[in-house]
Each structure stands twice: as C-alpha cells, then as structure tokens.
Image (tube, rainbow, N blue to C red; front, side, top):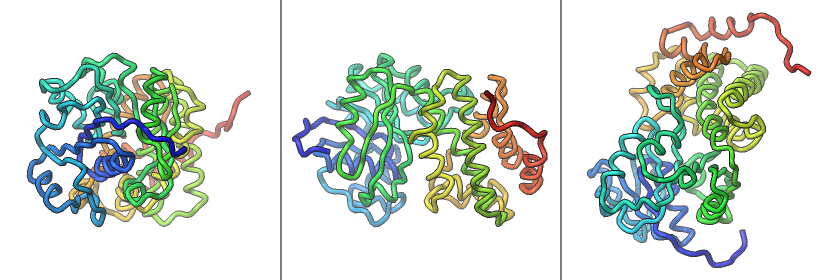
Length: 343
C-alpha cells in the first residue's frame, strides 16, 4: 500500500477473542482510535491490566492506545464503525444489545468478521445484522477470508475480502484495514463470500477426519475439490456467483482451513477420526469451532434449497448421529458414478 496518510476513524471491535483482538491490533497499527469490547467483565479487566489476551492470543502485547472495556455504552460512544467479531451463534444477541444502547449511531458502518450460519434461522451473518440493526443494507459489509489470528497478529502477509453492495463503503473499508501485511480486496457478492467462508468449515471437519484416519494427500485433494463443488452448487442456487468461490472467500479459505495446524474445525475432525466423541472434543477446546453448528445449518439449507451436498451430509451424520467415519468415507466413494463436468 502507498505511504499516503490515512484519515483516522473511531472504530469499536465487539469480541475480544483471538480474531477480534488481532483486528484491534491491526486497526491500531493503521492509526485508528480503537475500542475493544469484551462481554465478560473479568476477561476485559484482565486484558486491560496485563495488556495481553492470555486466554485467546497469548504472547502478543496490546498497546495502551487500545481501550479495553466491557461497558458497551462507552464502547460505542462516538464510533463511526462497529466491527462484529463474536462467535456466529451470539451475533444476534450482541446486535440486539447494540441496538438498545443510546450511544449507538444509526449512521455507523457495520462490519462483520464472524463466519457461520445461524442454526435456527439459517441466516447469513449480514442477514442477522440487517434484521437486528437499523442500518440500511449497503452499510453492512463483511470482512472475510483466509486469516488465522495467530499469523496476522504476528504481521504475516495475509489477504482477505470486504464484501457488500455499496461501492463507496467497500472502498473506504478497504482503506481502513489495508496495510503492508494485510491486503484487502473488494467484492460485491456478499452472498457468495459469506456462504463460502461458512460452508468451508464443514469441509474442514471432513478434512480433519481424513487426517485422523491416517489418509493421505490423494484423499485430501479429492475432498477439497469436491467440497468446493458442493459449495458452488449451493451458492449458485441461493443467488451468489460461482466465480466468487475461485477467490479468497472460496478456494483460499478452504485451503487454509482444511490444511492448517491453526484450524479449529480441522482439529475437531481429526480428533473424531482418532475415535473421540464430538462432545469430548468440544469440552477440551477453549475456542469455538464454527463448523459444528454450521454443518447443521448447511444441511438444513441444502435440503430446503433442493441442492445435494453429499460431503456435508456425511459430516452431519458423523457429528450428530455417531456414524462411523470410515463408513461415511466409504459411502461417499461408492455413490453412483457421475460426470465431473457437463457441457
């Protein structure tokens, strides 16, 4: 990025998990006035005192220029941009809290960085925020893509996408976040971007199962390729663009989540492949594996849309009905023979 001076803005980051903390650090690096809000006052107080998020992002110092608080009214006072980085299943509740705060501005730009589908409503996160907040459609955007907090917080080069319908807001958001280690592209296909970064978590669980079973590179390559084909089918049916899935929110996020040691969803699948039960795995984790709830929503969404997602269906049966992972893999392999592409 060029060295031109950017205009400082006041931005509130909701959620002090690993990714929320990382984005607060990035925005601070870019010269913005940043408030990091954490729901649990004890955790907020600890982060404030120690200047480190030992629970979610150990070893990374938080400068005193970042305000850390659990007071939502103070956190939202005067901010022009609100960044949601809470687990997807809490986004609706947090948005309701935000709406009820007097200091919240209807003119604020809402930026969602949470990946997932709401389990009961099957809504994407921008849809949830649009239902709960008074902002017009174009003032809600998504900042999404292949971006592990463990790497971005240590300033390793990363590229993501900001998606929405208002070109001016997209360009402005791009400039707010972009720097020499964090490159941001714009995309007007919010449907495709949000579905891509959500559904790949289910494929990552499947990839982890393959790892836990001891399968090799051939298996992983086939899984990622056919998993991407599933995601494209559903995205196209629901109004997104297939070409979006060839970008960062599709194949990019799919690769990093299915391959990385940092991937929580891949880890869940790996432990299940090694013989552990789902609840046992989840009980032993500090962070949230979004793919578990997303798998339920994805299967329900695909059935409602009449779109076949064979990998997601098998992951669903392994996670929630105790199906043997080896049998699930076999059932995928012996399905009726098909053409890969049609002309």
